[in-house]
Length: 107
Image (cartoon, rainbow, N blue to C red; front, side):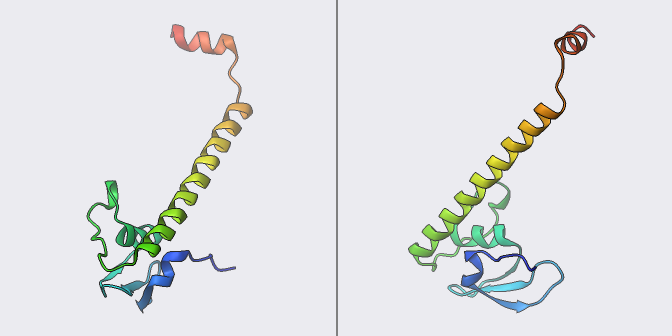
């Protein structure tokens, strides 16, 4: 089953198929770039951190920016929930006894 594509795909056209990420063209400013969903979203809504170098599209409608921001927020919530579940699984799967904790501290 192919992966489900997000909202960002509605705002680009594929210029060239590539193995992992196709080369795409922004529907609004015609900028061409290669990258996954995160890079596309960074182009449309702007970004800091690791993707601060990605140029933001100044032609994209505000309603698209709002929709993509909601999508990114939902993905972040899912990632946080997964991490919490994973942390809980590790904590309950491998309990450390008080004597082991004290032995580690005294080393």
